[in-house]
Image 1 (tube, rainbow, N blue to C red):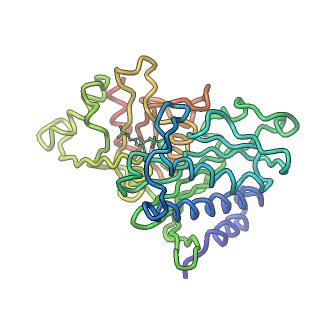
Image 2: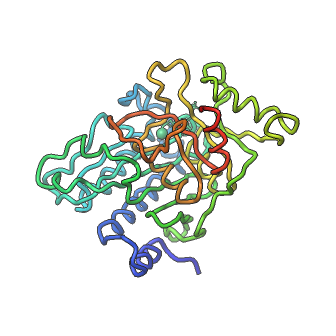
Image 3: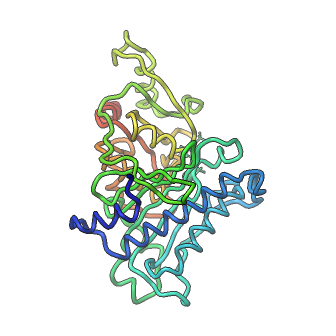
Length: 333
Ligand code: AHM
Ligand code: MG
């Protein structure tokens, strides 16, 4: 018999892990939201949910209908519970304060409601990424501000993603390893299907958007060049490549069989920022990756140590099998 998500969380509490009643209920609430999103995603054209919404988000990207629906599902399912002080999302310009009609809680929830937007309309795996932080103590008695969210990824108390693929999965860490739940759609329950997930330290598989190669910085060009050189090159082995264009699918593959994922900044960007967002993409994924024995850096610095200065800050991401991430770092020194 598989354990349910609730049973897993209760057992974590009994084992003395730092998991308050509020945090437990918050995670269950997020999991319920992901179930609703999975339901909408699966309807596709039958639900009239494909295509563009006709609006742009704060990053200037065209919003898909499903981006907006997923965002609303997460807001509506979690605003009234009393566990949250506020929320922030890729799809909202600024923070979402809990309305005065509801009690305020002590946690902050950040999310990318539907990651892999370019894959929504083509029926390729997409997902929801989430990160949970504690609201600063003093913020509970005053107006919440954007600055309250600007905490390093190492402060996360839980993080995870739901993956809407051939199966609907929930990958979770509460800071004690990584576990995976599979949605049993017949009964609507998340069931524990993998525990103690560990990323192999070595790999022969990289994931990068090769179409950007002429724009990369020299260290990235050199690293990929050496991977492509195969058994007679400096790496002495043949590499395989994958690029799904959904970070959730990419990270999931790495959690299952190892690999390395790179979304580096490139020369088109004077700020050297990269594409992915620190607070609700890179941080939660880095937390999961490290909890599974992998590593995650911007180029040479640990992502979880970065002190954010903006809610929608972007960052270079290089994550995956520990020894391969170390190898890439050497190209930058
Ligand atoms: P999104 O949040 O707008 O969906 O963008 C993030 C996605 C990642 O999931 C993926 O790794 C990357 O963007 C794909 O980028 P590209 O379009 O360059 O392949
Ligand atoms: Mg995204």
